[in-house]
Image 1 (cartoon, rainbow, N blue to C red):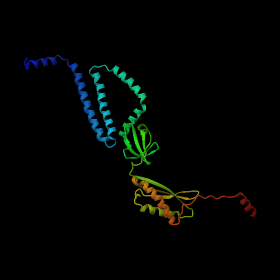
Image 2: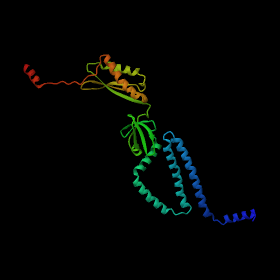
Image 3: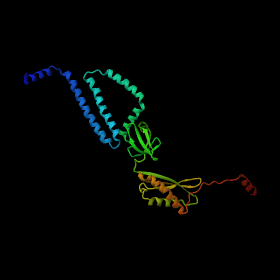
Image 4: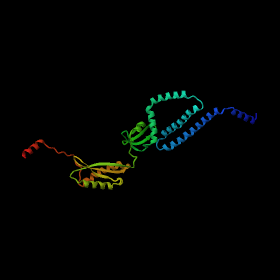
Amino acid sequence: MNIGDIFEEVIKFFGNIETDRIFPYILGIAIFVFSILLAKGISVFLRRSLKDKFDKDSLGVLLKVTYYGIIVMAVILILPIIGMDTSGLLVAGGITGIILGFASQSTVGNLISGLLLMVERPIKIGSKVEIDEVRGFVEDIGLMSTILRNFDGLYIRIPNEKVFTNNIINISANVARRLEYTVGIRYSDDANKAIKIIAKIMEDHPFVLKNPSPDIFVDELGDNSVDILVRAWTPETQWFGTRKELLWVIKSNLEKEGIQIPFPQRVVWYGNEESENNELN
């Protein structure tokens, strides 16, 4: 048999195949190839977008779940196209999914919350935050949990579901942060003089911002003192150090000018003294 005869036999073989029978297989192969390309494209996009927000291991797990998840969904879509009955498979998968869902509700919740945190990105590694009454720096954002390092240097693991459903205070999100004091002076002291002294301290300090400008005013006439409210803005990175320093500087400068912070005072009246005074009158 020569090459020409072989070619004729091949043509006859494919000519006997019905088009409506082979087309679903071609479509299924096309969908499968497209799903692989799509999975690779999404994986590359996620790797570039999240490489600075996740450690290498967590990012690798996310990329694998995404890649194979897309391919599995494509296979489930292809099976009915090529004529395979998937009803039994779907029933078995549904039952298995229900069992696994009840057995791992918290795990699934943490996983979904982790993915939502990646999309929304309310925090990032290095952020100074307060979550569920825990304050500290974000050390890691994983698929299942977030790690914070509090101000005592302790590492605290918080499940992602709790992170996502609680209020998140991102302290370092803004470049500036306001500090606030209440400074009490005696009623005999000059409040206007005290305000000028504090304003001069704020003006001379290198980390107190000019805009927004400091706000200093008499806020309340208390039982023992005239309370002056002091508000000023400082760079977030310098907030704690500036707050520690300024309060002592304010106290020292007020005392140098003879303005003192009063002690609590009470006036006590004795009933027998009052009755004696009435008799004398």
